[in-house]
Length: 106
Image (cartoon, rainbow, N blue to C red; front, side, top):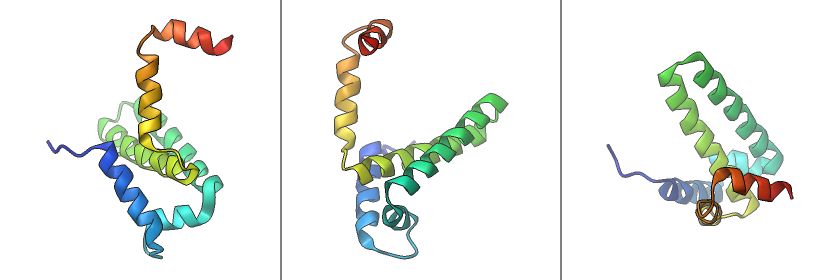
């Protein structure tokens, strides 16, 4: 098992996005803007759900990797660092999920 992290993937996404390399999928997504990146994220989310519902472990692992990658691309295009999302998750863990969700409705 490697110690690879989402923070490392975030760094890779940032480097490839700035590369301008026409052979880089990341650079192409960035060039396409937020709409293209977000649509791809949505596609990967649906594929992840399908893999989960079908019980296909291998597909679920693969599609989850695609989902996380495309999510980080969408965040990067928006200029939102992973650390900001993690800080929000940390803030939410200070209360129960039920209480947190109720607070968002009000």
